[in-house]
Amino acid sequence: VQLQASGGGSVQAGGSLRLSCAAPGSIFSGSAMGWFRQAPGKEREFVAAISWNGRITNYGDSVKGRFTIFRDSAKNMVDLQMNSLKPEDTAMYYCTSERGGSGVDWGRPGIKYDYWGQGTLVTVSS
Image 1 (cartoon, helix red, strand yellow):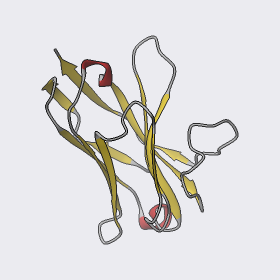
Image 2 (image 1 turned 90 degrees about the vertical axis):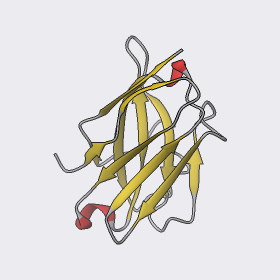
Image 3 (image 1 turned 30 degrees about the vertical axis):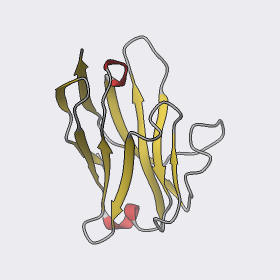
């Protein structure tokens, strides 16, 4: 497993969680990084992405204004701060990477994601 996701857990609606994804430097450097999620019985959904240089961020419509993505080049990690969580945010969250990408097209067909983490479960109760 090249990408290691962590930080999932259970929280009540309105609460916050912070997910982290660690990557080897050879993957992290020069790659857009980000997150998708998948709830039981539903299709995979784009959550957030950040460009290889950290200058561009992109969010799925359902999380805009509540989630923030960061990348720490010193630690080769990308974090997802999730605030104002809702029960519909309950899902397995997966981090992924795209070599040379900006993240602006994530969620659209045709994007080649190079590596995937093992997933971390987020459960939000009402």
